[in-house]
Length: 92
Image (tube, rainbow, N blue to C red; front, side, top):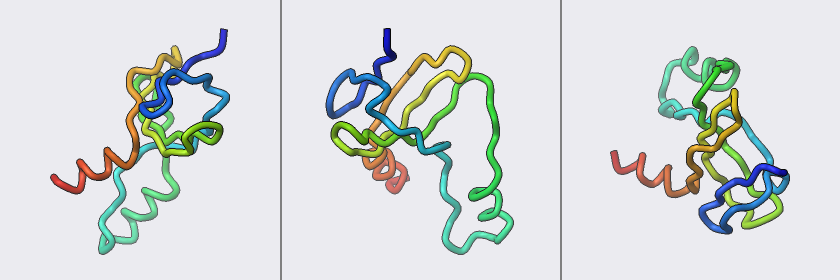
């Protein structure tokens, strides 16, 4: 049976409708040191366990999502609209 992703806009959808785009990392400030930008752009952890990634719902609502999943079991713990998350981070 195919894995289902709980899209906050479309409901539970097959994972084949999504494109994984990479780690959901906090972006450095515009005036951050070059070393911080280098780390953000080029260096990635390869964690075992809980991890947040950007996913694009390419065959559905076409929204960017932040999916929290376990890299060992592939179980999805949460799925949020990336725009909602960035708005809440901007308020902090």
